[in-house]
Length: 268
Image (tube, rainbow, N blue to C red; front, side):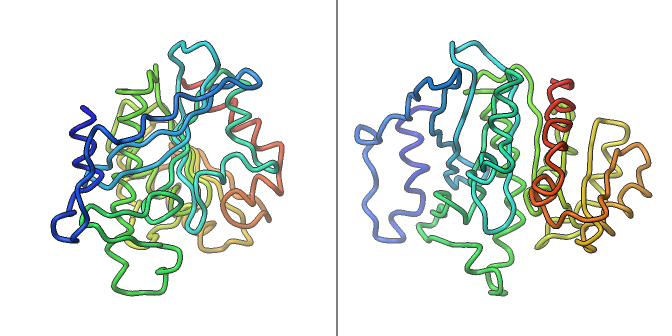
């Protein structure tokens, strides 16, 4: 995509909102990144399917060679930094395995808050606002666009997707719609997270590689995983006796990070 076209995406709806359109010549270049500890990290931006500009962090082994890439989709009220926390550093774990990561801010979170019509939304703060509910399902398109950008612009030789909570639901639907994605891992999915329903998607993936995880003390997700696996026994699952929601499972069971990272790397 040309810089001029991207400028238009950045200010879609400017005329209606009274905001002056951004000139392509003044768009700051994408961060070229820096090499530290064998990893190259840089900030990226790309449009979702409806033109909303998504922000992410791309981490890849130094040297610039194409690498397999895992798209990381966070849970509600988190952002892309969720995936590099010391207690569950997925980014570092994948880097050790020579696998790149693209951690994104889903719409309404982190830096991805500007809608194409010029409005801004914080979908954590608006979680109890009924008028905001239609804004959540397009998160599936955010994950789909991240997978596409990893291939088209970041040199991914293969792609996988890992999500937590609403990011898990978004990841599952995106995975079901794209048979070229190598594997999906979903931490604490639900049957319906704010309009993102996954029962049909789980059935449609058949025997493709998929891992669903939950903990029994998070009954909503644990029950969902049990029902989903009953509908498609080919899906692999893990329901822990305890562990909480999303990446809290990994905090409670730290050995799971290495096991899942190995699993995903083996499919790429």
